[in-house]
Length: 188
Image (cartoon, rainbow, N blue to C red; front, top):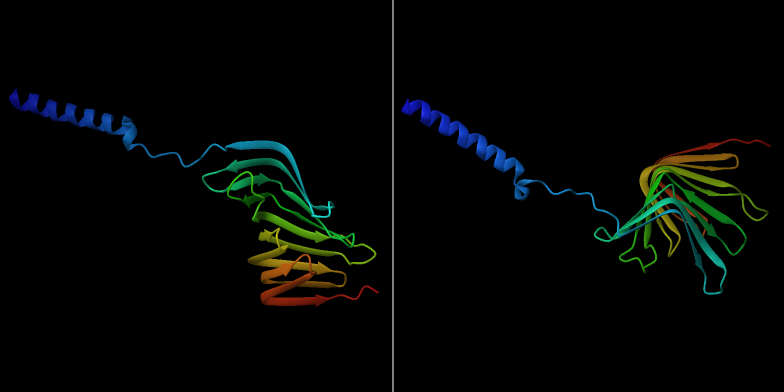
């Protein structure tokens, strides 16, 4: 009988310790998801040059600022970068992170993810260019764009593909780094 009571006591103590361990808040893992400090739906932000003309516009279906990560998350961002010559670059993707330390700071960099398209529509002065990738970093200060992923650049009569790219929207200059293939197609 003493053995049976001792055995039941050990089982009861084990059950109690397992119950206590699993319900003790200090043993639970913390949730890594953070609630945004600020968020908006259907956001539109316009930045101006010192001369008062529109420099760029950014739209997003959803925007949320996460101060502990020092960036904002954007769903379906759409960026228009307007040039003095009347041309424009359009950059869009499925998702983006706008890196900035506080809400008062302008984004230092946009990290665009998922079906990224950077496109310059044709005008009387410039030809149409379309660059696609799955990942792209865009720096609004110097209008540079870079990636280490697969890139496809399409211009009239020309398609260039490769891995990795660096370019400047304000200089209309792009360099593709590795495994570059070029295909010319004369449509005249």
